[in-house]
Image 1 (cartoon, rainbow, N blue to C red):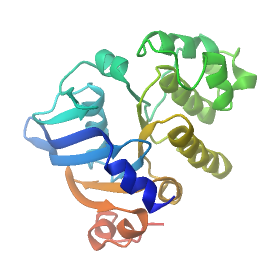
Image 2 (tube, rainbow, N blue to C red):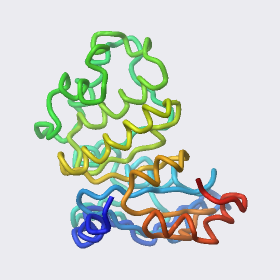
Image 3 (cartoon, rainbow, N blue to C red):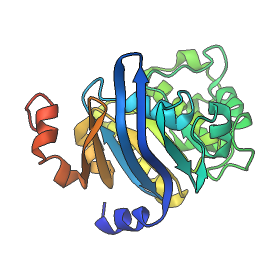
Image 4 (cartoon, helix red, strand yellow):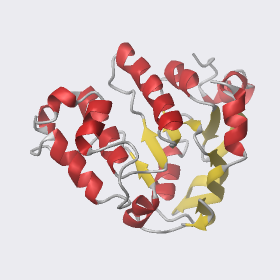
Length: 250
């Protein structure tokens, strides 16, 4: 990854999260979080369990409404729009625990996702081509319930891509994958961003992979952004190391 990519991306902002706050009764899950995502940028979002990463994803994707703050996508305020409208505008997400239609085939799952997308022809390809792209070509006609954890993760990505997004929110896609598959995930995301003009926010606990695959990193801790910068800068940040139980990131 080069600094040039990240710097150019920041000058061409696709997604702007500004001062987002989310309260759940007496709990502050997010406290004035801001971040920007540039065109073709891969942004890592990390933090300990309970840091607010999933809450932020839910707010961007429309599953939750923020208590305050705004989410702007390609210059349009989308704060509080429902998930179906956010998806059709061009933001797709995956879930940490995949929930495909288990009794339908892999290919049928991707076709269904396509029907709920933006309505544009997918920049990535047809549902069958997307299955091939994520490594499920030989499993397209299997029921989704027959896939292992890694296969379900790949299907989750395929379904998101089928909606023809401009922004992809990836939630721990490397969890459950072998080291070799994790390396595939890094190469895959770089291809998606550069070849298909996708901007990506990647939440991941496998730090070794994430730090290899992103241009910039944003770190949350207890709902607050405590660091932002290039991977090599963030891993040496004292506040970040303390957030991870005082240990160095690896």
